[in-house]
Amino acid sequence: MKPSIHRHLLLWVMGALGVGASLLIGGSYWALAHEMGEVFEDNLKQVALAVANHHGSYGVAAPPRLAQQLPRIYEEYGKFEFVTAVWTRDGRRLHSSDDSVPLPFLSRSGLSEVEAGGERWHLYTIVLEDGIVQAAQRASERAALARETASSLILPAVVLLAVIAWLLALALRRGLAPLSLAAGDVSVRSAESLHPLDLSAYPPELHLLVGAINDLMARLGGSLALQRHFLADAAHELRTPITALRLQLQLLERAGNEAERESATQQLRDGIERAQHLVEQLLQLSRLAPETPALRRDPVDLAELVRAAVGGFSARAEQKGVDLGALPGAAASVAGDAQQLGILLNNLVDNALRHTPPGGRVDVGCALEEGRAVLTVTDNGPGIPASERERVFDRFYRASWTGGEGHDGNGNGSGLGLAIVKAVADRHHADIVLGDAPVGRGLRVKVRFPPA
Image (cartoon, rainbow, N blue to C red; front, side, top):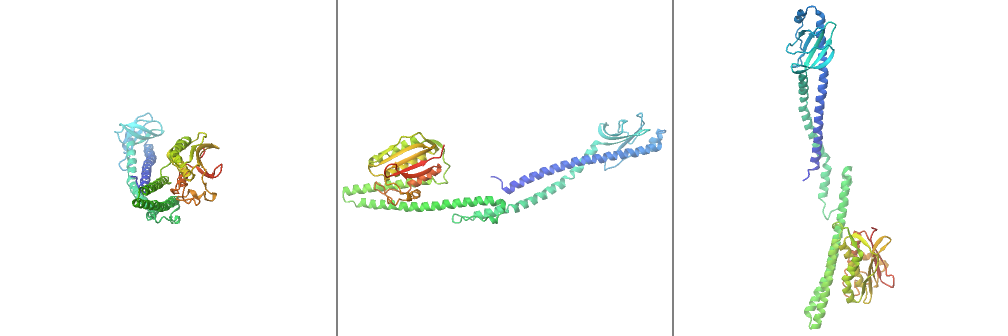
């Protein structure tokens, strides 16, 4: 489970603060060590000058006296001390404040670092006309003082970090309150209440998210409305064949002789086929809804699709007395779902056979037109008036000029065939063009796919 935004932000901010605090303490230690080094260097210089002044008051004529009169000089800073030494110009030591520290003789004025007694020392040397004066301090003492001073910053930094963390947690909770408000407003929505959220109730940073939620609810509302409409239409359409089946069953039960029984049985068989056809088309239409999985994109040979459709309907066409054939044409292929394209072409051929009279003709073919693959189904049936060509793609729409009946006379038109064709074409970004047959009356349907 992913952490909440509040916790995620808090962890990142606290991590940044922790890094910042570490850098602050490290930088403070470096700055303190640098500044304290300058202070101690100045102190070394002052101590050396004080010893030099004392040395100048007595001269070097009486070294034993000088050694007695020069006291052991300390500049105390807590436990830290300075060690001093006085030398003649030729390197003879006249005095040392601590004989245990063998400071080296240097004849060059200024600051230097030396080794004495196995330790590192900071040494300041002053060269006088009649002698040399030195003041020294342990390097380890300086480092210890810097560490001690820097460590005193850790507790205040931790306390400050805790206070800032508490303030940040409070600020984040208050700052993310609009998200909780939006979540609460969305949670009270239902399938019956999908009105959009008011953007003015939220800060500008949430307008993009709230707008996306509003768009989603609008699409969901449209899908639910379409589903309710579809279910209502399906229930209405299924009521008719079920009622017809019940009546045909009663006729079969009341049949008084073999001829009546055979006629009632045939009517019942036709009714079952009509109901089965309607249910199959309803299932096909439900699988082509916008919320179904993404379309597969495989190479589909349209010529092979035409041959399969003609072969599948040849027996029905022969039984009805319709000349069903495949037209020769250029090889054409498209990227799409072969199963869905087969459903599209089967519905077009089924629709053409249903409305073509005995002795008529249905031609199925594919071609290339202006770089676009095209499927065509042409029949010499009654055609579709131009005024109704836009509406025939609506679900459960039955053309007024046929009364919902086909030329087979069994009234098995469901009003779903062209709706299924339109749904498949839309998923493949194809156009459907309804036109008149090139010779005589009839209908030509063209499905034009986008350029490869």
